[in-house]
Length: 170
Image (cartoon, one colour):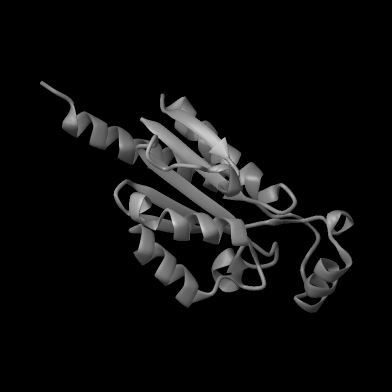
């Protein structure tokens, strides 16, 4: 299957999560394209999509939200998985707007949404970002669980592989 892994990442940490997921899909024999959401022109060439975003101020980054909005119909006609990466001190589920994520899942008919803890490197943040992180008491460091990320990517690959096998000619 041809799979799109599109990830919105401000400082690269969430993009690295997407790359681990893409690697699990590649290892299972799928053809994978990794793109920034703003660079996705069409969903039509893809059999499945993994769409992810960093969470800032309780919301996905604009480019991920915009891709989901403009491609909602084609996304809803293929397997889609969503993931979020939030503050390092809490799972993204605590940072995400529950209403926004529920609406997004419904709009694109996503099979699942997974939350992952993130990475916080204050040295790459803008003054405004450092102020927000200080108020949220963000803890410096890399809190991503790449074993869990890889396992989730492998579970997507298994699900897609089972669907391929079920539709294979005898």
